[in-house]
Length: 528
Image (cartoon, rainbow, N blue to C red):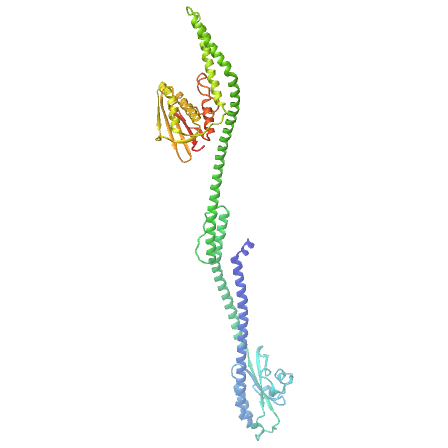
């Protein structure tokens, strides 16, 4: 948890800003206090110089007149000023001639004393000392505070060596030294006070700026980043509709806007992929059904081809024997009929008629087999499809009348040219119409619909029969599969229709079937 806290960008930013502020304010505090100390020290030094000059000028006249008491009085009076620790006047022999401390008058100081070190330890003469070498800092023994001492040489001027009371030679450059000692306590107290105030203010400023930066980072940086993080987590969980609330137009706002665009595109892409996947599954199922149908059609064609070869062989072998049986049975029946007396041959004649009838039925089966197995190439010509339909209706007209069936044409075409084998199309139409008639033993209506477009022709033949049983529907185009009684059909009619339509690159299907009737749909291409 601690590691995660310090890994946050906002925490790193606040810590970095705080460290930089601390360094900047520390440097600023150091420079400010140093400048303050230098400035106050310089002012105190100037004050010491001014005091020294005042003492020199105040005592000048009394010294020229050798009024020692006046000089003592002036020095003692000035020595009572605030900040002045003491005033001394050294003669050229190093003896204290005047002092605010009367106990040290006439005493001689050592050359190693801190007051004398600046003049006697360096190579420069006292009259040549720089302003910096005239100043010394030392500790006041009375209160252990810092003090400043200023040495101001008393030069031998013309008024001095020409005065009657003095016996100074003009060659003497310096008559003595004025030593003014001032306290640095108030200055050091002011510096310490300013140092404390500056450090305190710097800390307060640093804390205030850090708090402001923290608030700024929290509102401007951390919160948008948290929103971005939450958005990324939601998208990672699969919520592609998640949108980040945008409250700014800065870089983070642009990032949030880009994120929303990205999530919207991801959602769109995901939906597209999902739809594509669902459609792919549907397409796969659809194609599987199509392949299954094609496979069934291939099986059907293979069955038809194999059965066609078998049918041709069987029909050829059976045709002649059946013709002989039929011929001789009719001949014997005729002879017996001519010679029968008192009905004695009636039973034999009945048997012979039955043989002839069954032989005729076998001959019809053989004929259908020959038609089914006929492999000669159809000749396609341009013919009138309406004419082919009308001829087919004419050929089965008597069947319609015998069964009380009305045929209704539901199209408005007078003529329609199509490329086909007219005889085969007519054979297929007759087979479909006969199939519809046989499905309505109690009469009814047959509707013929013809629809045409640029690529195909659709013919629908609808009856009002009993319909086809669902279990029989997948097998109705198979050879010898029949739902009629064994004596009423061969099961080759719809198989022949299927073969003819396939040879024309068309399709024949059952569009609908129910107890109320069946509709066969034939689709033929306009150009075969």
